[in-house]
Image 1 (cartoon, rainbow, N blue to C red):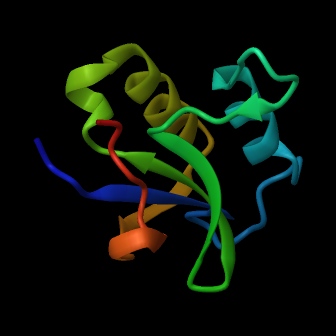
Image 2: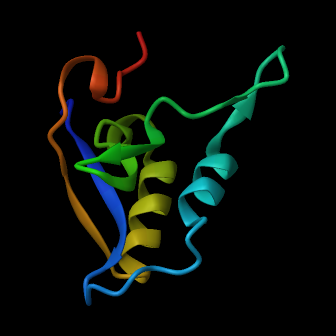
Length: 100
């Protein structure tokens, strides 16, 4: 399995800004869950983050084999809205961590 992640930006292929601007928060909230404490926990494989100074939705490519439905949903959303997607090159603690 690849340890890479994709960063999906809020910019469209046409260089227009994608509206609404809260799409990242909305999408990760749908895929998040609550535990015993009343805090929202993002999925390990999909999280909002700042990549190269831009707010992005970061999607772990290992979800393609471990949670294909989520991976396909997010990638189809990006494709349907013509969002720019690039490889997230962050490493170490800054990168998405695969759950143990």
